[in-house]
Length: 78
Image (cartoon, rainbow, N blue to C red; front, side, top):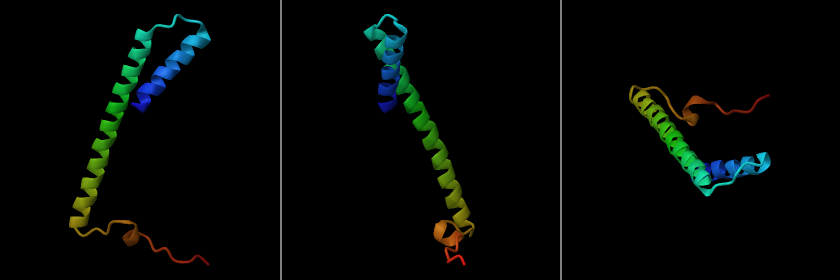
């Protein structure tokens, strides 16, 4: 919903700056476009995050050390 609001606000600003005709239907259309874009982006990012998570689980099952505490030695630098 945030991206939809930002998209609608940007449409309003652009219309006011360029001196175009302001119509509520166009504002709602811009809001809907932003809303759909946000949902699609969120879905794509969730898909990739789940894939990476599954990859880490498979690697851990095969004995590969995972997680920051197993991969890094956070000692003092001299």
